[in-house]
Image (cartoon, rainbow, N blue to C red; front, side):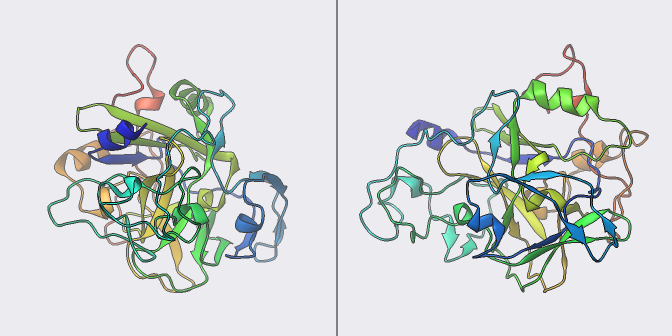
Length: 328
């Protein structure tokens, strides 16, 4: 598996295929430390919540899990440990010594390392894992620690439920993970095609482009089993961006980091199309956004750069004859 680490290069494309803004789900706040994400680490439970703000009983039931779980198809087990650990005996690993940091530092303190100006794609991030000899205080263990800020699910005016920060969050800080059932391509496509126009879609397709031209795909569905990340809405000018972070295996954690300083009370959002570090869209991306508008859902982000429609990925709606698991 050490070779797998060295082979992962290139870009990342993140898509919520028929993306829709969140419909009603559990309400409430998610504090760090003694909040339910950390106190119930590794456990799943049903969450029934009454939202005093919305003045009606929330009928949706979510099996809450702070981490990814295996999907119903059983094709992928995100809890399996397949990576070897580093042999560092210090409390915190250092570059050029730790095997997990063979491509350089991932973090500057508690902040994601800023990319070099010449970098056009997301550099792969590998954190120290369960097999590593370093301690829990290692600086290369960040996303695996879970929530560090207080977050709150709240009712928006047009977008159903949303997620906002209750604390100031500095640019580059880890905010939350987008966790749920990890599915194989066939199961993800089956679920997408079973949806009606009234259903809210939570399935995200992550495509990572390797240096040899291959594409690695990850499908995560937090519709019924998931964490607080499922309540994040799309924005054409988001304050978060997503980075696949690997800890124990090649199945990534879909980590969301602050793209800018975020004020307390500000709604959290990311671009469902997964633009690298929220950089301006390419001409090819702009052209694809103009296609299939009849099938796309309206965007209510309200930003000055709003594209009017939510990002669209038609691959999971295609038939088996016209679509493969590695196509874009």
